[in-house]
Length: 419
Ligand SMILES: [Zn+2]
Image (tube, rainbow, N blue to C red; front, side, top):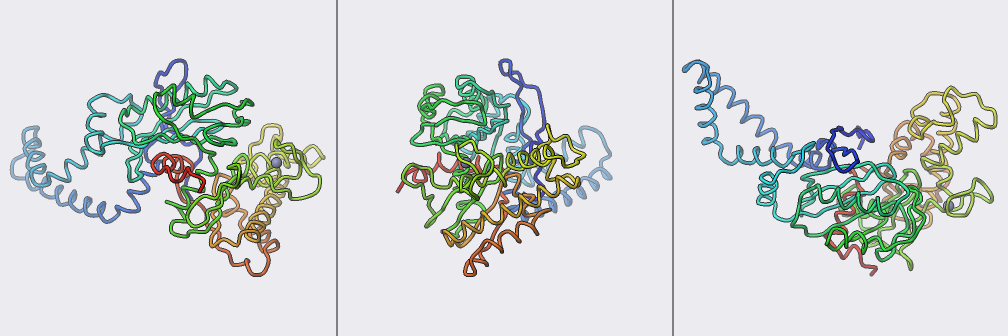
């Protein structure tokens, strides 16, 4: 995830009611990275074949001259020479149809090639990202849409439309992750989307799309993805901490997510760091996420500016990303402090659980393991008891880990059960 840029989506206008579709660029997706990781040998082979083909083309042209007929004959000969690789490349070209409406022919080819797909949907505060995965976890198509705010009905309609637009009728399962408390399909409000009410998300969305839907908290999906397909693959006992707008995560024990008695285990963002302190959306004060999350950084930066610190940023509108990137003195000081507290909070988790690994992820964690790693490590060293000081900390490398987790809960229902 080192070179990942948040929100770098190719924008194409695809009419969908009044909404504007944002169609994700496939290269952003995990499919490309998986291909790159797994298939470097095959890529090299393809490159070599292509090079050999270019040489043959040159020789052919030297013999027969240029022109369409010569070119067509050459293509035909090449196709006969490598029927499999030609077919494979062609199919891949058809699958990665981004920025266009699915046409029936392409869909037919996709289904013939991959059979059924798993649909996953990540409902974020700013965008809804939906993707179709092969059973082995490769993204074959993904679409994005801006998240409608403050209306449960508009939100559910938008999710249903995005899933529908993916264009797959045969599905193994549908998994959705949301930024809120979830238990047994019921969502207990989505504060970042401006929805306060509690509602049966799984049943209502399931009714709209006519299929069974699994729904889970996004940070729990992040933890599941990291333990099954990410940095924690094969580790068994680990903690995943997601530093985004808030802070969430999951406790993985024996390769399974520990859910607690109400499916609320992993709400690390509400660990109390001090007596008093800034007020939190949970009703408490001095919570971990009021200091070390994206919204916490924005809040502490505003505090500093309002207390009279001279800053070159407009504190009323500065985002966490801007504060973390900025060289402004006040921004740097606030970011350093946030990184130290993040390290300290992660150390508390190491003290409490003694896991084999802690995976940190989310946009803010990039800075804690990059520009502000020194401060994060200082905070961790100061907070960890001696026997857990060497707990390895890894940065998430998955693209869209919560989306991958939503795919896993839909395709492997045992991840849903509480045992
Ligand atoms: Zn709180």
